[in-house]
Length: 296
Image (tube, rainbow, N blue to C red; front, side):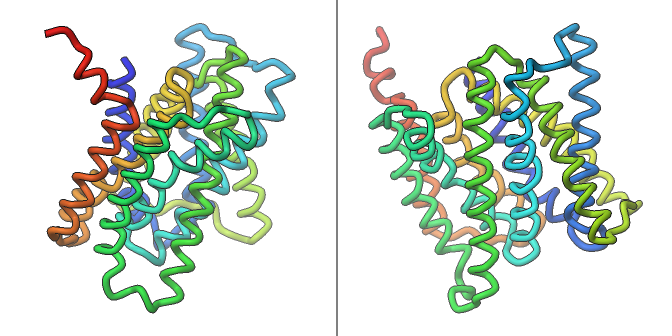
């Protein structure tokens, strides 16, 4: 089950970067994000009704829901949409891959979680691999301050994502299902985005172009309902540190998509980075020991 949740997260979220890119342009980013999570929240509540699960969370959970809605379904994506206006989608996915290390450090700082040697070792291997992919993507952009501003925005978005992970883990430890917490947190994020958009005088209309609507549908259904539920269930099952290691594989899927849609070119350095990322996965989940200990 964990492997299925892991691969579902990797394949879906690894392809959402290009869908986000397709939404940029006519519609303001806060409006696009509000539409995405507003639709996703409605689907979450409908699923809760079908599954006959409790809809209203306990009073003690609301402070975590508001914090998660702001961090995971508002500020997180505002940073990423801004970053994708400046830098290639594959490069934003590369920066996002620092999430495992941030989850480990934040878990230690704010929740007292022990730092696991295999998780840290795997994250470091993965980060070296990411650096190889990063150098490939940054060719010709190292002296551009605007590009670095986009990377800072992507890192801040990843930090918000990490905080949202810890909040989800806390609520799941209270016995709350991710469908309920996601639905309410998405709705809270949507309301904040709508208030901000109206205050800024942004029109709430969406583009009727087929590519925009297709990207919106994919991001709302696959990226939000399925992707976030699979990932946050994984957080509850194996912890935020190991679950976040799925983000290290996102650049690989994102770069494959970028190859077809943005003309990304692979190099020997890309394959070195890919090999290191895969090795990092083996170490992070201690799979090498499990393979050795498996009976013949």
